[in-house]
Amino acid sequence: MKEEAEHDLFVEKLSKEWEAKECCSMNEKIYMMMGNIGGSSIAMGVIVLVVGAATGIMMIINGARLLGKRGEITF
Image (cartoon, rainbow, N blue to C red; front, side):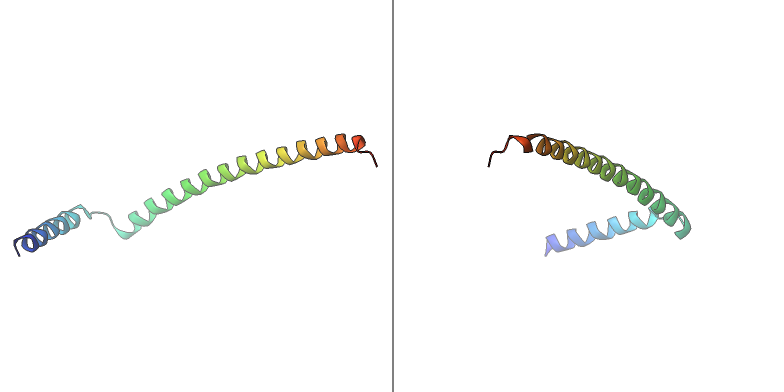
């Protein structure tokens, strides 16, 4: 019973601290969220671009090697 009371006091204290920190309007929150999402979208785009370019280069190299070794096959 004592543990539940301590837990309830802890949760109440945290909720009061959280309410005190909420100083931003909804527009400010949206503005900040859009900045975070935009930055992460750019980062993901760069990663996809690099992985795609590396994959394309590897496919070109492997295709050239296959075409080069094609003449070595005997029937």
